[in-house]
Length: 142
Image 1 (cartoon, one colour):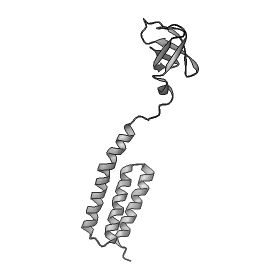
Image 2 (cartoon, helix red, strand yellow):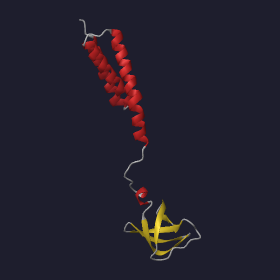
Image 3 (tube, helix red, strand yellow):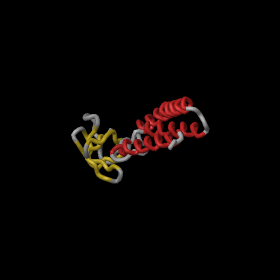
Image 4 (cartoon, helix red, strand yellow):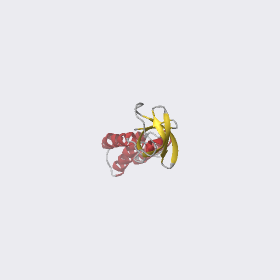
């Protein structure tokens, strides 16, 4: 039995797709798309050299274009800050005198322990302060 070349390209694309699912390597998906392009060329009557060239060009082009875009998106910080990151930069009201050794502030409706970033500064009750950082359960203010 003689199987057409385009079928072998489809089998290769399927194998690469399975490899993509198992390993989660996106490059395998790009190679699978290259194999599909080669299958299309084979189905249209292109010879073996053209099929291999199309496979290589499409695969390399996808890797060259898609990988940098994916890497850029992967390295970006999320737009929505959550947890303690969301509290940094917020304003708080001093409930108990805050200095370098401690105090209390009301932050986002909750009472937090706080200390001044500059140990020489003192913030009195009722003053508004900015949250610079969160260290454990203590807000660092200025």
